[in-house]
Image 1: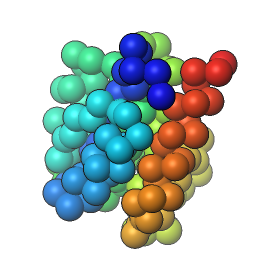
Image 2 (image 1 turned 180 degrees about the horizontal axis):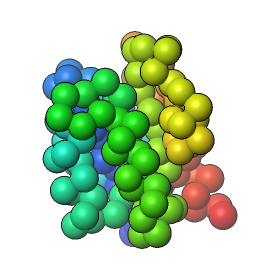
Image 3 (image 1 turned 90 degrees about the vertical axis):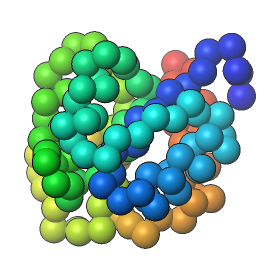
Image 4 (image 1 turned 135 degrees about the vertical axis):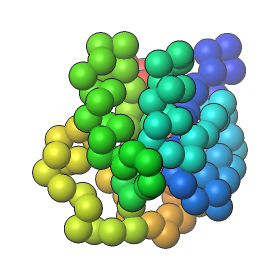
Length: 128
């Protein structure tokens, strides 16, 4: 991986263990990772910074993942950001989520598979 241009990710999940698992997987393939434990905290971070990848849970207190996604998709500064939704609830992957997210993955995730997927995303962006 080219380390001269770091690939950044923001993980948003109210469950510490899910955030930690995603952080380990993404750091393993070269991402610089930050995290937020709810949607409000994520939006504050997204006001200050841009990220290459957003990994967001749908079911969170304060502000759910679908609301986070719909708010940031209206902002031109985030239009290049890839969004992966992680959810344990298949019924939460609505048409709105499908339209605004790039990928939907269901928990529990396999850490090795998630790492490989994130690496492929990085390679696709660098080659385009």
